[in-house]
Image 1 (spheres, rainbow, N blue to C red):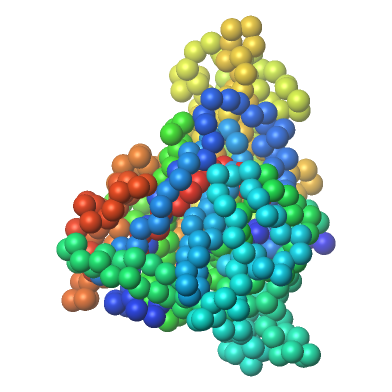
Image 2 (image 1 turned 90 degrees about the horizontal axis):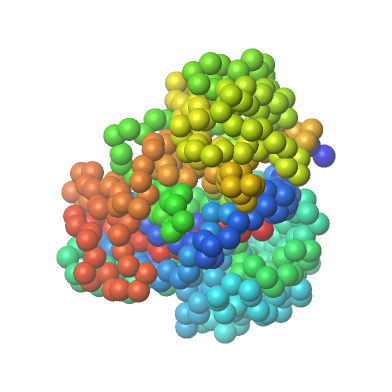
Length: 492
C-alpha cells in the first residue's frame, strides 16, 4: 500500500442551515490550549504521536454563534483541537475533534461497541441516540447525499436494510463504522446590532456503532471527529453547496505558551497574504513545493522529490504537531543548517535527532529557511519554526531540529510547527491556500457578504470564553457564525 493511501486523517467543520438568514457568512472558532506550559516533551514522543496521526489519515480512495471555550494547550504536546456542538432535539452537547484531513463528522452512538465512556480531557462524553431526537432521520441508500459519499469512498450501502453506512479503517489498526443520520445542529446567533436569535442547521453526520484500536482509549477520548476536508460529505462542503456558507475557512494558531488562536469559516483578510494553488484532484490539502532555501541559498534537491503522486507530495495539516520532510530532502536540509551554525554552536545527536547546544539566542545564530511554492509564494521559517527546545545540558540550551523524516517516504507534511504564528486561508472555491505572518493573539478582519451584496469586514478573534456576545467587538455583521474551539496539540 502506498504511504498516501495508508495515511488516514481521522476526522473536521460544520453545518448546513435551516434558519440562517444570508447566503454566505464567516464562522470563527477561537482556539485555546488544553495543557499547562510547564514541561517539555521529548521529540521521540512527539514523533510517536504524529506517527499515529499519520497512520489515521483516511485511506483515501446576520448572526454570530458563540461556542464556549475551555482549557489551554502546550506546544510541546501533540494535541487535538476539539469543539462542543449541540445536536438533536432536545439538544445535547458533543465534543468532537477537528481535523482538516478527513471529510465526515461522526459521533459515538448509544449502541457503540468499544467507544470510551470517560475521557482524560476535562470533558464529559455523551453518545448520540437517534431514537431520542425528534428531528433525527436515517439516511437511506437512495438519498442523493449517500450517493455523494459513495463517490468519495466516505459511504457505502447495505442492500439488506437500505441504510447508508460507513467504515473507516486507519493505518494504526484502529477504525470506526456506523451509519449516517441527519439532525439539527443548534446555534445561538447574533444578528446585526445586539439582537439574538436561536437557529438550527440540518446536517448529515455519522453515528458510530463500533470503534477499535486507539479509538477505544480514554486518555484523549472525545465524542467523535469533525471532518474539514474537501469532499462532498464534509459539513463545510454541504454548507457551500446549499449556499449557506462560503467555501473557505481560515485559521491563525498562536505559537507562544498561552496558545490558542482563531479558526474561521470565512476568509481572513490581510494584505500580506500570498497564495499558492492546491494540487487538483487530491483528497488532502496538497501544495506544489518546488524548492527549499537556507540563508538564501537553494538546496540541491531534485524538484521531482516534491512532486505529488500516490506516495509523495506536500500536505498542509494542522493536525500534525511537528513537520516532516520527504526523505530525500531531509539530509540536505540538516547538512545546510549544521554547516551554517557549526562555528557558533555545538552540534549533538540526541536519540537520533540532530540537536545543538546553544548559549545565546537562536535568532542570532540560525538562518531563515524558505519553502518555495508554485505561484511564486514562499513561506519564510524563522528558527523557532523549525527548532524545538529540549532540556538544557551543562547550562547550555539544547535545541533540536523539529522537521523530522518519515523513513522511506516521499511525503512532506507541514504541521503546527511551521503553521503557527501565521494566518492560513483555505480557499476551496478558488482551489488555493494562502498565508501571511501574523500575531495570532490579535483580532483579524474577516470578509463577509452583506445583504446588499457588498463585501464588509468583521473584527474577529477577541471573544471571551465565557462572556455573552451581546458586548462583543463585532460590527458590520451581516450573517456570521462564530465557533469557539478547544485546542491542544494532541493529534490522535
